[in-house]
Structure formats: structure tokens, C-alpha cells
Image 1 (cartoon, rainbow, N blue to C red):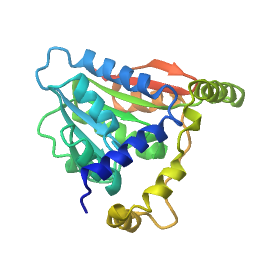
Image 2 (cartoon, rainbow, N blue to C red):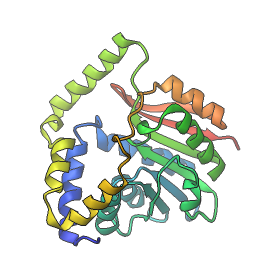
Image 3 (cartoon, one colour):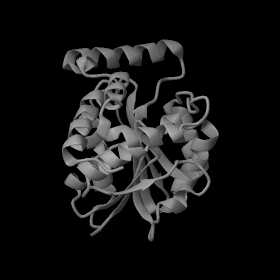
Image 4 (cartoon, rainbow, N blue to C red):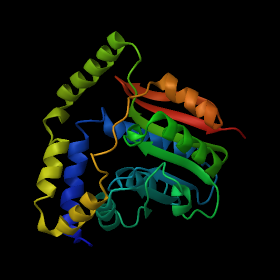
Amino acid sequence: MGVSMDTARTWVERWERQQRRYAVDREERFTVIADVVEHVTAGRPRPLLLDLGCGPGSLAARLVRRLPGAEVVAADMDPLLLELGRTHHADAARYVDTVIGEDGWTADLGLRRPLDAAVSTTALHYLDPATLLDTYRSLAALLRPGGVLVNGDHFPPESAPCSALTARVGRRRAERTGTHADEDWTSWWREAARDPELADLFAERERRRPAGGGGGTEALSVRRHTELLHTAGFGHVTTVWQFGDSCVLAAVKNQ
């Protein structure tokens, strides 16, 4: 079910443009995540990083450019996106096919030493609160003392008036930067499904899809994520960047 380099490049580049519609100041968010990881791993010759919900390797590729000595393990459940990443960003990470939050998912990672950092962007929001707490606990166990979890996503405020304000700010920013005109999620998937080279991967993706579609979770606030992270064993949690409701949240494991 492999794909050619040209095909992978085409669809990864379109993915990058499509994702700009949904993550406000996406490149700055990636840069901030890398800033945090760089700080936490300073002086370590080969830091071990885990990219959760890696998709086609967008964040992993940026991390290895910033930290060329790092070892990155990139985990996702989507066979098509993983294959695009393995082909287009082959040197960025070791890609792992696993369902984050399911029983045994951490064993699938094949880690031989503690993590220095775990990162994610626009991926963990599909987990329900109970599964998210279990996932946070698993990550706390995998990280070394002083290691960090960095999660970039949309964390709307709990009050409706404030949530409306942050959403509006994000939309206006997208309009000013022109990213609202990029291809959207539905269009990307529709057009990719028409590529005959991706047909086998789409068939595998559909085979794995839960009956009834599955997924779908509530959007949790920073406060709620912070509570879950403290419960999971992270001693220190803070927002390190925010624009609208797009945030980067960092949680540090006690030394």
C-alpha cells in the first residue's frame, strides 16, 4: 500500500494548506511547541520525542529541523496519513500505527527509554475526558522527571460569551492572513479519495472506521485540561501561547 514520492508530496503539501484554515497562526504554534521542547531538552545529546496524532508528519518534520539530533516517534491511527508521512517525511520520525488511548497503545510505541517530551497539535480533542485522563496518566509514566507534554489545540473558554469572542478573533485573523481561502478538510479528503494511488489506503481506512462513525468529543477548556493533567501527575501546567482559542499548553512532570 505504499505511495510514490510525488504523490506523497502532492497530498502533504495540500494537507499543509488545508490545515492552515483550522489552526490560527499554525506556523507560530509549531514554533512555540519547538521552543518549549528545545528548552526542556537543552544539553541532551539525543532527546526522545513522541508526536501524538502525527498525521502526515507535519510537526515531526519541523521538530527534527529544529532539533536535528532528536529521535522522534510519531503515532497515529490513520493508515493513509501515516503512509504519506513515511514517504514524504521518511527521515523525520519512526511512524507507529496505534490508537491513542486504547489498551496497549503505549506498548506499540516500542520505547526503550523515558521520553523527554511528548507533543501534539490539533489531535487529542477527539478523546473523551475519561480516555484523555488515562492518556495523560500514560504519558506522565512515559516521561522522565522534568519532561514535558506540549499540546497545541483549540481550547474554548467555558462561558459562551467569551467563547464567541475567542472564536471571532480567530476567524478575523484567518481572514486577514488569507488562510480562510485555502482548501477545507472535506475537499481535501474528497479529492484524495479520487487518486487511484491512494485507493488501497482509503480501503484500509474505511475498514478500520468504527461503526456509526465513532469519535466526537466535547471541546475542553484550558481549566479542564489543567485539572486532568494535575490529576494525571503533572506538577506544573501553563499556557505558553494563545491567539483566540488556539493555545499551546505545556505540562511539566515533577523532577
